[in-house]
Image (tube, rainbow, N blue to C red; front, top):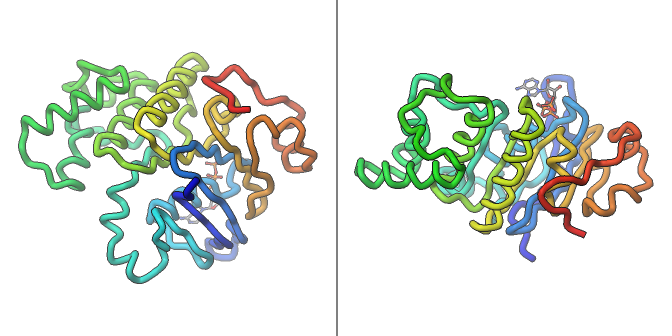
Length: 256
Ligand SMILES: Nc1ncnc2c1ncn2[C@@H]1O[C@H](COP(=O)(O)OP(=O)(O)OP(=O)(O)O)[C@@H](O)[C@H]1O
C-alpha cells in the first residue's frame, strides 16, 4: 500500500532541548496510525510538523508524495494543507462563533466558498455525520465536552481531506463518551477512506481503532507494529510505557 506520510530522520530542538532526534514513521494510505508515548516526548510536535505549523531542524517529511521541506512544496503549502484536517488538543473551536460558523470557517477561508445555501448544506451534513444534527446555532460553551470534540471533528472533515491529524481526541472525556468518539473516528475514516494520525495517551482508543501503533520515546520511534504484536513486544520502552498494564481491548475493532 502507498505511504501517505513518510518521515525520515526527523529532528527538532527547542532551544537546548532536543525533542525529536531521528524519527522515522510511515502512515499507509487509508489506515489509522496511533502515535503514543510519554507526556512531553514530542507527539504533538510530530503532528504540527506534518501540518506545516512547526519547522523541523532536519530530516524529511513527505506528505502525498511531496517533501514538505522542499522549496516547491513550501510554495504549494496551501494546496497541501487543504488535503489535511487537523483536530487540535482541546478541539480549539472559536468560542465567539456558533457551531455552524465554526464548521463553515474552512469552507469559506480554505476553499473560498461564498454561497450561503451551499455552505449551510455542507455544515448540516458534517454535523449529521458526527451525530450532532440541530446544534448549528449553539456556541461551543453551550456544548458538552464530547459534543465539542465531535464539532471539532466535523470542522476537520467538512472539506473532505485525505489525511486527518487528531491530537488527543478523547482526552478529558468520560469512558463512554470517549468510546463514542472512537467509533465515530473509525467509521468515518473507513467510510471516507481517510488516513489518520491519532496522537493519544488513551490506550483503549489507540488499541481499539488503530491499524498500527508507534511508540515515541527519547526522540525516536522506539517501537512500531500491529496492535496484536504489542503484548509480545519484548521491548523495554513498551514495558515501561504500559507500566505493567495490558492494553485494554474493548475498543471498536482490533486488527489481528
Ligand atoms: N514551541 C515550543 N517552544 C518550546 N518548547 C516546546 C514548544 N513546543 C513543544 N515544546 C516542548 O517540546 C516537548 C515536546 O512537546 P510535545 O507537545 O510535542 O509533547 P507531547 O508528547 O505531545 O506531550 P503531551 O503528551 O503531554 O501532549 C515538551 O517538553 C514541550 O515543552
